[in-house]
Amino acid sequence: MKTETFPEITMRDQVRETGAPPTVGQLAARLQEAAARPGRWWHLVRFDPAERVRVELEDGLWLITWPPGYRLPAHGHGGAAQIMSVIAGELAEVAVGGDGAVARPLRANRVRIQAGDSMHEVVNPGSAYAVTLHLYV
Image 1: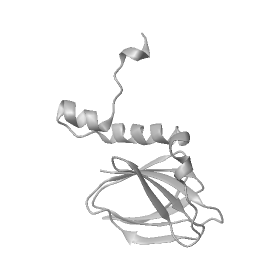
Image 2 (image 1 turned 30 degrees about the vertical axis):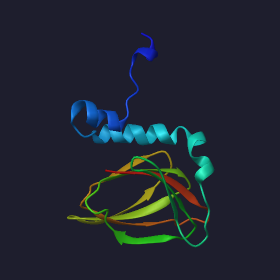
Image 3 (image 1 turned 90 degrees about the horizontal axis):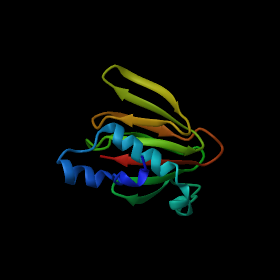
């Protein structure tokens, strides 16, 4: 079967055509698709040694650059779920939930999903910049 016969699926089309919001799996696939096409966004990466740099790409998709040693204090996302992937470098996260705090590394090419009502702290523990893609829904 030819792939041209399949419609291009975007999250905006999902809501418009079905009336249902996209699933977490569909959002994760969208994030992975964006990560697989750095030619579309890599030119927007900016390196600031003092602050993380956030650039909105489209429909809730964000590109964020994290300087070495940068720490983002514990925070939530105002009820929005976050789906993220580290593209380059490594981050560390402390997720705070009903069962306590869990520390974990965030490594490249893995998708991390955070519920909208949870808190976390993120730090770049390394000596190099980290680059991430995020979706907030």
